[in-house]
Length: 210
Image (cartoon, rainbow, N blue to C red; front, side):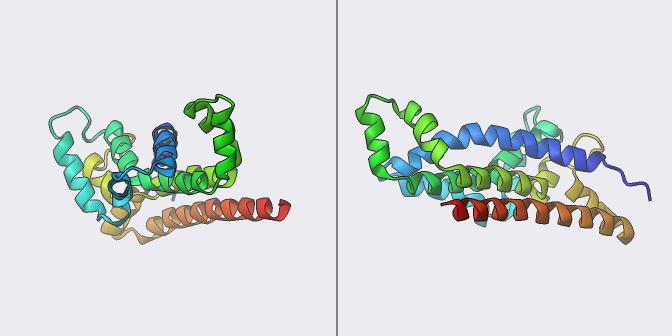
């Protein structure tokens, strides 16, 4: 067969947009969660982590219901919205863990010399959690590339618009086109392995340098 790269390119575009948006949203959220002692912290952490345990069909249904009267349905924008909800914990949790592991004296020293919370975040905390930052970005990207249930429910399967690689594989299997499904699945498998290997290899190198 002639491999159609359009679903893969659409998956990568979706993952890129989602990762960028989530980074700017999750960064202050993760910083707040790592620093706050508010009684509402467990509630916020629960809401943030909910997509990990919530069935994609449940999240997809409620997103479909919420977006049904808006222009953001069965198009690329709906995929982005769904992906941001579904991949949120994969960006927040590594960043939060990284911030929580920082030396408290370093953070306090930043405030003592007059740095604001925002300056402390960007110029003190963020440069010191590079492994956690890489984990958050790479795993969020990879997780978004592999999404299926949520994106299918809110986006359907419109070629060039919402038909990402995971949806294409599902349709191949549904149509008993196992050869095509195997090729697409193998590409996704190799991609996922490469992404995870790069993260673990980088973290190993970082630890060996300490």
